[in-house]
Image (cartoon, rainbow, N blue to C red; front, side, top):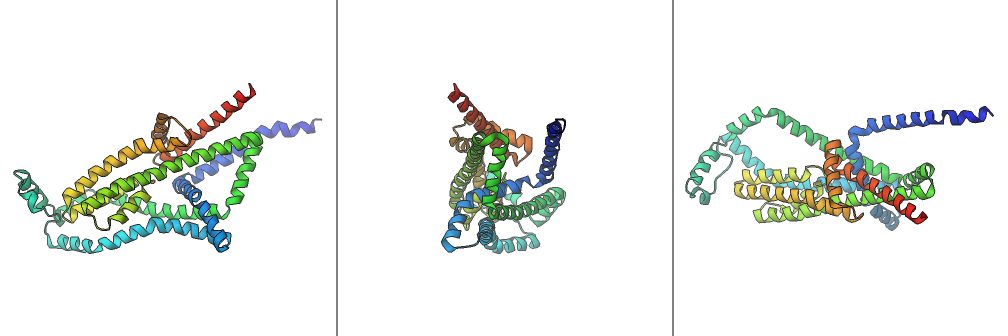
Length: 345
């Protein structure tokens, strides 16, 4: 009789040790939470298409997963490569101006004729030459270094996200079965199914919000690109839409377009693009994202709104995604429990 009680005596300690192990594993992977989560989101989006591709061409799972991962890399990288290739001639012109000591930004003749403003702009823009820009960059070398470091981190995280897509897609069915088995063991079949359904609804809602914000920002800011006469503006539109799910991604693209228009002599158009882009990004992040994120689960607008802001405050930039998932998951579990209690009455 004494022996039969031994497992139950140490069961709580075993659970505690197990929780410590999983907490340590989560802490170890926390520096890569961004690419891992983004890879999971991309896998969720592309998984049905991968299955169709495998069935249509009788592809093995490893090849379908590889094509899936490479497709996302191509979607992210190819527009950026084409944009860089299209602006290289203008970069050569800027380098020539830099070396010659001439002004980097030309003031249009029509603007120079504006009383007071034209002469003031002409005097200030004429002083913006290679020497002044070199001094400015030297004075803010730390900011330049940090920006280059962030660019390297973004490239590295893109690679890690692609690896995550390949790994998750390679074992898609097995991971689904493991999640179902774990939820069943923890809460039973009915509660486990409800928990997984709440997880799916929360992830789908956040995913719809990310995609919707990308479409809105890409379309409305793309109109500004076209009106401003930005060369290859459709590619800039695609780049804005694709990078917008990344925190401050759309802002970076708009800033690059503004600088490019400014240094090519269209600085008024560049400032208008910057102003319009910031308005669109602000409205999309603070209004469109909460509306779309809560549309699938009928979550209150302000609940989603504060989950986005609170997630960013608690977890950093990645909290813009993690925060709504956690809050919507908690709400979904609560509503499932509430429905079960009402059915028992």
